[in-house]
Structures are given as C-alpha cells and as structure tokens.
Image (cartoon, rainbow, N blue to C red; front, side, top):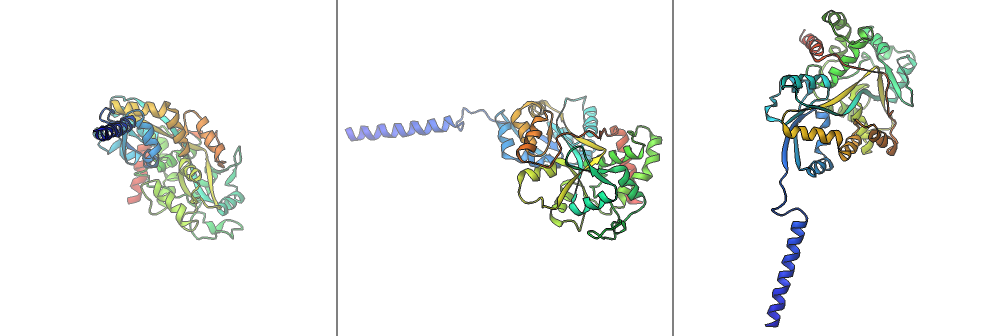
Length: 362
C-alpha cells in the first residue's frame, strides 16, 4: 500500500510540473490568441517582415503580421486593398494616393532610405577622372546627376572616357533601373532626373513636364530590358559582377543590409555611390483598418522594432538607431545627407511615368 501511495504521489508531482511548464510558457489554453493583421508592402521590406525577431516583436504586442509584396505604383492604382489592414508602399506620393482614396486614412512614416547607385571601384575611378563623381561631406563618393545627364545626352560610351583601360566596353554609360511602369525605385530616379532637367526645381506644371520629358525618357528607354522589382537588379549586381551592369540604382537600405549581414555578398571591389541630388524614399504605412493602425504605431514608437529596422539598413525616425548600426558594424555610410529633394506630387509623377512608359511601345 505504501508503495502504491508513493507511486501515486510521484505521478501527481510529475503531472503538476508538466502543467506548470506548459502554462508557464504560454502554451496553455489560457494564452491569448494573436490577432492576424494583413498588409501589402514594397518588396524591399519583405526581408524585414519575414525576420523571426520582427515576428516575435509584433507577437509580444499580440499581433501576427502577414504581408504580401507588391510594387508601390501597382499598390496605389491596381491592387485590391479591401483584403488588407494596411498598405506600406515605398514612397510618400503612392501613400498619399492610397490615403486620399481611402477616406484620408492615418499614415505613418517609420523609416526611409535614400536612393543610391551600387557600382564597382574601377567605375568610381573612371567617373571621378571624368569629373562626374566627387567626394561628399564625409568619406563617401557622390555621383553628380547633372554631369551624368550630360554624358547620357551625348550618348557617351564607356570606351570613350579618356584613359579608360579598366572598363573599355562599347555600351552607353547608363544606370540600370527597374521598369518605371511598375517600380517605385525607378519612379524615385525619375523624380531626381526631372528635378535636374527642370533647372533644379520640382516639376509642378504640365508645361514643365513636356519640356523635361525628352531629356529624361532616354535614361530609361535606352537601357533595354528592365525588371519590375528592385530586388532583381540588385541580386544581378551581387552575382554577375561588373560585366553585366556596372551601375545599378538601389535603395541604400539594400546595400546596408548586406553589409550588416557580412555574408560575403558585398565583394571588396563593390562601392556605393550617393546621388547629388538624391531623394529619400519615405516608406509610408497607410492604415486601412483598425489593426493596421496598431502596426503603424508600433513601427513608429517601439524601440525594438526601430532597432531591427536599422539593422536592415533603414533610416528610422530617431536617427540614433541607424547611427548605432553604422558605428557598431563600421559601415562606410554617411549618417546624414544634405543634398536631398522632394519628389513631385503623385499626379505629376503619374503623368511623367505614363509618358515614359508609352515610349517603350514606341
């Protein structure tokens, strides 16, 4: 009998410990279920939202955030947003259009990324000798867009640059972009080029649009085939080297993310050129429904999410997080940029993009 009692007590004890472990870890039936929040985002933010640390941070606030990628322009004018709690395009003009079409919904701009050019050391040297690249306020290189557009207007080839023995290729000097009919990064590039072509002024009239279009359209149509996602040309840059695309338009965050990962994808001869002027692509979340508001608020105010965003290369509202990442990882990136401009209004940018897009068919 004593033995049976001892066995019974042991069973009760083991059961009690097991239940304590289960309920103590939040795995019991009393744990609150997560609220599923669905969003559509620019593809360049997919790695951030897919990261387990980000998922865990949202889960601590009771949210299971699930996302689908889409182009920012596509998001603003083509995507059925009724299925989503928030839309998170990569530019403020696209977000303004979505907000206007959805009863002036709340918007949040938790982080941004300036446009830049991923290139190679020999290209930087060639363009420096040609007077197109110069040093910025810090230890970083800057591509002068006005001087670059002079080269493209003259149809200058790489092998026509004086003293070029490092990249004597018989093709025009052009930055590789995405398709302007689909992608936000190409739209941001058009914003920069149109500003320069308009006498260093934001385009805001249809007369100005007509004047600058012949100057900016060849920057796109002379490239040949272009891809519709900013990830694709950047991956080509990382894998194919200088031979295929010597200069690729990127978000700074894409390049910074790979530097932080330190996974060997950024080779010793790879360089990042900042643009003068440049545009900050302001990643702006539009809360379409209640749960989307909570995501926007957390991205704006939660320190953990801000720190994680900075590790993916994004410049957060509080600059200290990006500065910390640059310092900790010894990144060759400036913590501030001064030569920046605003993109045109959504309506102006749409007309410019449509006009450029029609020339592909022509």
